[in-house]
Structure formats: C-alpha cells, structure tokens
Length: 472
Image (cartoon, rainbow, N blue to C red; front, top):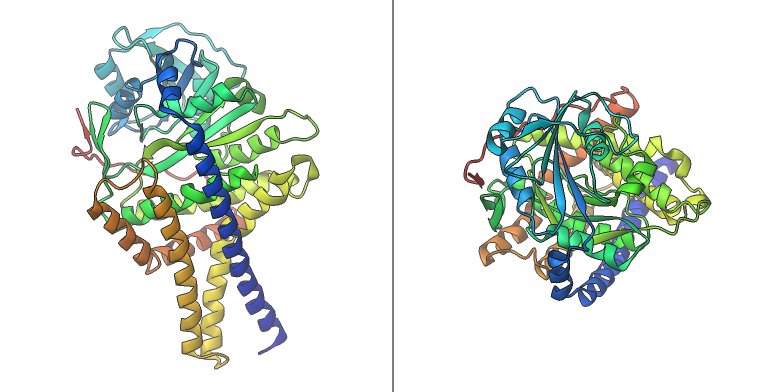
C-alpha cells in the first residue's frame, strides 16, 4: 500500500473513532443535563405560568408561503395553546395559492392600521388584518421575500417581549409555551430557548388539539422519525451543555425580542436561515469582548411537530438544501473559527458542525471509494471490508438505540408497544439504503455549493392534504 493511500485510510479511521468518542461524550453530557432538568421542573411551575397574568407575554410568529393545505389547522392549534397572554402573527409571504383567502374565510379577519414596533427592514407589507372573533390573531400580507423576511416582518409588528418562531406546518402541545417560557422566569440572563422537533406525520389532531401521537406510515417517514430522535435527544442537549449548540431549528425557537432586534434577525438570503442565524446568535451571546453574560437553553420537553416529506423527490430536495445551507452558514461566519473572542463556540461548536456534520458525508463517501479501490486492486479482501462495514453499522445502531431509549423515558415515549417495536426496527434498517441516500445527496449538494456555485434557496417542499391528520 502506498504512503498516500495509507494516510487516507488512517485519516478516515481516526475520523470515525474521533466521531464515536465525541458522540459518547455528548451522550454523557446530555444525560446529565436531562437528569438535572427533570429534577428541577415541577408541575406547579407550569400551573403557575398558565394561570398567572405576570407570565412573560409572547408573540407567536408563523411565516407561511403557499400553505393552503395546512394553514387553517396550524392557526387553530396556535390559538388553543394554554398560555395566559400571547398573540399569533401569521405572515403570508406573498402566497400564490389560497392561503390568505382561507384565513379570511375561516377567521373573519379584517383590515386595520398597525404600525411597526421594530426598526428591522423587510419587503413591502400590503396589509395587516385582525379578527373580532379571535382577538389573539394577527395576519400580515406582504411581498414575497422568503422565510427569513417573513419572520422579520412578523417581529416588526409584534407587541410582546418574547418571540416564539415556528413553521406553518408545525403543531405544538397545548402546554408547549409553558415549557418554553419557564426557564425565562428563573434566569434573567437567558436570551433564547430551543425545543425538540419531531415529525407530525402520524398525529391525530381534532379542532387544532393533538389527540393522539402516532408514527409515520411510510418507511421514509420512519427513517426521519429515528433521525430526529437521534439528533435532538442527546446531540443538541450535549452541545448546549458546552455552549456550542449551533443548530436551533426554525420550527421552535423562543427568543427575547430585544436580542432578536440587536442581532438583526435572520438573513433573508440564507439558504437555511435558522442555521445561519443560530451561528450568528451564538457569536452575539458569547462574545467575550462585549461581556453580555447571556445564554441559550435547550428545553427537552417542549415539542413542535413538523411535517416531514414522505415523497422521495421532496426528501432529496430538502436534504440537498440543508447541506448547502449548512455550508453557506459556516462560510458566512468563518471569522468566528478558532477566535478566542467567541469561546467554546469557536473552538468546539463550529469545528464540530463543519468537520463532523457538514463534512461527514464527504468523508464517508471517500471511505466507500477507497474500499472499492482497495478491493479491486487486491490490497484488501472482501472479508476485511465487511468487518469494517459491520463495525460502522453496529456503532450507528448503538448510538441511535440510546437516543430511542432516552426518548422512551420522556413524555415523547411511544403510544404503544407496536410503535415502540416499529421504532426499533427502523433503527436497524436505517443503514440499509436510507443512510447511503442521505450521504450521496449531501455529497452532490456539497459539489453544487463549492464547485458549481449553487446558492439559491430552492423550491418549498410541496405539501399534500392529509384529511385524516387535521380534522375540521
């Protein structure tokens, strides 16, 4: 074996060993953090928040573009949250379907005068609506400017000190805002909080209220159920413990309005604005030069359910966009890398995001190519290759099973033994096709971004009506 080939092989082995060790550390830190959180929280805290007029007021912002199939159910869910004082701001970002029309008919919204409360610039706002039947609801109609611009428009017309940002395809547990707002009562230095995201495919919802939690019906949906559990149940909890949580999903974020305005809100040109904004938010919070002494929190029992794609072409499009968006966000904030000014974010968070998340598909694809080359060249045997493949498979299954077991100890546990068994089965079959598809899609997206200069936001995921899921 040539020296160059040896270097490649050893580098890949070191990479995967390092990733496994880091994952074990994150699991340990996440478990400790989860135990600490569970020991501190009490039902009386949530009851107090739900019934007290002194609870911090929240503006719930829902950006929407061509969401006619789901917007009514999403707004009904938002209006039925158990929280004393909040408003729901739906921002129609220049939809070309019946989104705005459906909102007008269902909620009887009417035009009114309302002026900006923020200096953040956005695309032109056509009209603002309120409903005499639903005083919490505000609807904004504006010129299309993508999701980030819609969020900024919602913030510009919001009234309350806390902003909760979700997507139009999301539904929240009725006590979701209570869980999200709770840490702000105990920590004046808390700037923002993120919650858990799980697929909504399989939920049974009646009149905007979640009646039953179920699992997606397709194996593609189950693959994402497992993936979301693995991502949120230990990786993000552990990274947050290290002040390095650089991927807060746009499907559930609670942030102080003052912090949002100081950071300028999400970047409208970002491919995935939530990742880019999270990195920039970390830089703002942990800037040692400014000494703001602010922090982020991860709330493991606050859940937002989001629709995941169950059509293959939509799934591939989403993963392509996520990979390009992650690379764009990292390169856009490259000055933070290994900069002592930003503490753990620069030395742990950003390197981990780039090396072990953004570049993981590229490294794994390189390993596939090397394995085939070495096998064809007679440098190694099929038996040796299969041993390494089995070791990688067993490691992946081990970490994912831990995530599932952690989930089963929370209020996100399976609704039946049948669902639990289906989750376990999905863990074992994930690496037989679905994982490799994610790898190849991410590698192609990396090539597109770096070498072909593809920086567009892409098309929104097409949604299909599912009458059995959201009932009138």
